[in-house]
Image (cartoon, rainbow, N blue to C red):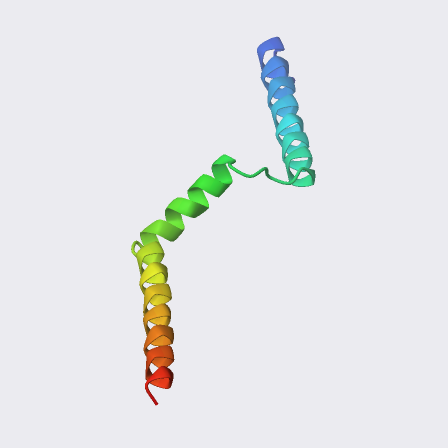
Length: 79
């Protein structure tokens, strides 16, 4: 069954779309993503959703280690 003119146009547009999609994926995979790109923003959002208090927990653990250090230093000075 032969294709009509509209059928050929649709087929050519579809093939051009598939080729351009593949080329854009190849070129995108060759280029590394830049800092601050949308991929980084999505990853940061995912990390925030998985660990919403991570920054505060890190600050509390730093504070706890400094308090322990001060306690040990104070304990050693009084001995």
